[in-house]
Structures are given as C-alpha cells and as structure tokens.
Length: 325
Image (cartoon, rainbow, N blue to C red; front, top):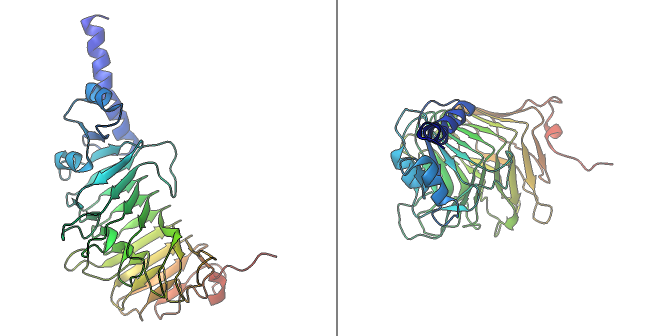
C-alpha cells in the first residue's frame, strides 16, 4: 500500500466512521470511545482512533467532552465499566451510548457499575444535572452501602432523554428512602426503560420504591416536572403491602407526569403492594396514566387525588391486570 492509499485508510479509520456514528445519533460533536484497558481490543482501538478519542474509564472520556458541543461517548459492551466515585454529568448536550447488538429494555450488555465506596460524596452512582443530555442502551447498577448513598441514579437535568436503559440498585432493600432512581428532572423523558428487580426482595414492609420523587434531593430547587415514561417497566418483589414503585409527596410533581404504555409488575412470590404509585394528594401537579398502562399483582394502581386514569376504559379497575381465563 502506497502513502496515498495508507492516508485514505487512516482517514476512514479516524474520521469517516466517527462521522457515520455522529450522523446515526443526530449529533454534531466529537466522538469518544470507552473500552477497559484490560480488553484485548484496547490497543487496537488506540491504533485506530488515537489516545485523544479512546479512554479506559467513563470519567476520562467525560473530562474531554465539551459543554454544548453535542459530543457522543460510545461505551464498549464487553465488560462492566466500574465507577470508582460518583460520575457527575454537569455539562450540557453530551450523550452516552452503550454498544452491543440490539436495543434491550433490560439486560443491556453495556454496564456502568458502582461497587462499595467510602466517600460521603458518593450519593449516587451517576448524577445528571445538564441540559439536553441523553443516555442510550446502558444498564446502570449500584451496590454501594456507604450511608450517604440514596440511589443508583440521580436525575436533576433538563430535557434529559433515556432510551433502552435499565436502572437497578441492589442495596438498602429495607428502606423507605432508597431507590433505583431519584427523579428531580425537568422534562425528563424515558423510552423503553426498566427500573428495579423481580429477584431481590424488599426486606420488611417498606416502600423501597423504584422511583423516588422527593424534591431537592439531587440538587437544591430540583423537582420533577413534565416527565414522560413511555413503554417502561417497573419491577419489585414486595416485602409487604407498603412497597410501591413510585413514591412522592404533595409537591414532588409539578405540572404533569405521564406513564404511557407502562407496566408496574410485582413478583407473585412477594407481597401484593396496596398501590403501585404511592403519592400524597398532589397540589401543584398531576400524574396521568395513558395508553395501556397497567399494574400486575397489585391491589390498586393508585388512590391519591391528582392521579388520573386516562386509559381507554377510563374506569379505576381497568388499570389492574386480571387472571386470564
């Protein structure tokens, strides 16, 4: 191969493919890759794309992403990406995409995982505060037992989009205030995501929600408003009738929160939650249930004032799955 042909090949490796990937995800910024240095392909990735684009940690790639440039970070799907400390995403318009064939609702092959740490600042595994950020095809897991940790993911951004992601926290299963996600996002949108577990049982008659709405937890003044869950699953093996999938107080939802074509599923090996959505009388917002949203193995989907059933039958009992005959 001559110098000219070699130059063309290098151009394809270093720029054309990133250009295609950018176009595929409708972003215009730089492309970064994260692959653990223990992976056999790490050296090959360095050769192809250079050290300015390939990193062995998510935090390393994030540090090089530029605010408001719509940079995109592709995460390899061969191993879990360990988080030694909380990943705080405060830049705007940055995007994280997990690789691996297919877009799963759960069991994504790209994983961001936090183990046990000792830092009081590790309140979440991942905390998002940016505007217009997105997360696609990633499984977020948290096993941290440090006292200050309250959830796997803390969402406090604006117009964040989650597509085909799973969020799972395996700790503090005996808590009313620990969750898979603390949601204080403004106009956050979830598509085809899964929260919680059908395997790990809640210990005792505790709420232990998948989604905790308590305002101000992710950041001062942060509160859920205009949130959409579309085609999402919420899983629990309840420890008692108090266990719920969503928990919030009277002012934890502003304007509207919509659950469209969602399923709240309680493992039949556990207890039957009294309600899937446990909120106080809502005073500054409403929760609406649309499409084919249902609760399975729960007594009711919700009873609080301010939760509106907008499913086709438009009667309260229509949101509870019944035994097929």
